[in-house]
Amino acid sequence: MKKEAYYFSHDANAKDDPKILRLRMELGWEGYGLFWALIELLRNESDHRMRTHYKSIAFALQTQEENVKKIINDFDLFVIDGDYFWSESLLKRMELKEERSEKARESAKKRWNKDLDANAMRTHSERNADAMQLKESKEKEIKKNEIKEYENIVTGK
Image 1 (tube, one colour):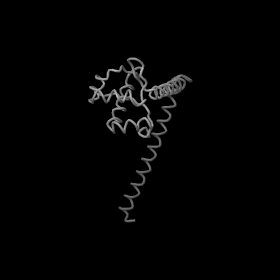
Image 2 (cartoon, rainbow, N blue to C red):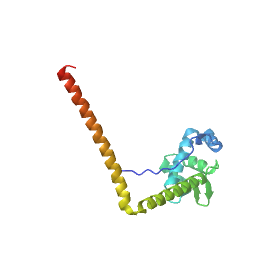
Image 3 (cartoon, rainbow, N blue to C red):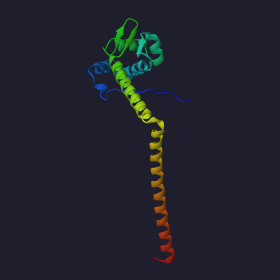
Image 4 (cartoon, rainbow, N blue to C red):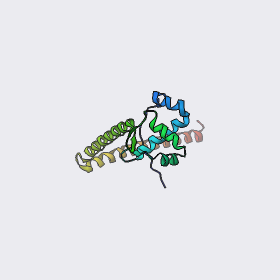
């Protein structure tokens, strides 16, 4: 069974962010790993928000409930509103990703609907035909070279 993995961007230097540095000073690299695990959990939620069921989250991440509470509440990494928490940074990134995806969808629609699908397919077929002709010409050249080599061997040249 194939497992789906969903993409989201993040800064390559996230470990150096002042809030993350405070987290690492208190909880070490384990805290950093738990932070990203929380971000991944949020990423997989349809609205990128989760209930603050610390005990359930801790169980899912196989860590202590206290660690989850600290990461969510103590380092200004998440926004908490009543029973839910989320990451503003993740929301912004997901919004940007969705905008880009929508633009790409629209562009693809325009490309495929322009001059009907038959023209788009013809262009695709023409490209394949060109590639096949190039391959055939290379194969012919290789055969000619092999024949010349064989003739040189036979004639002693």
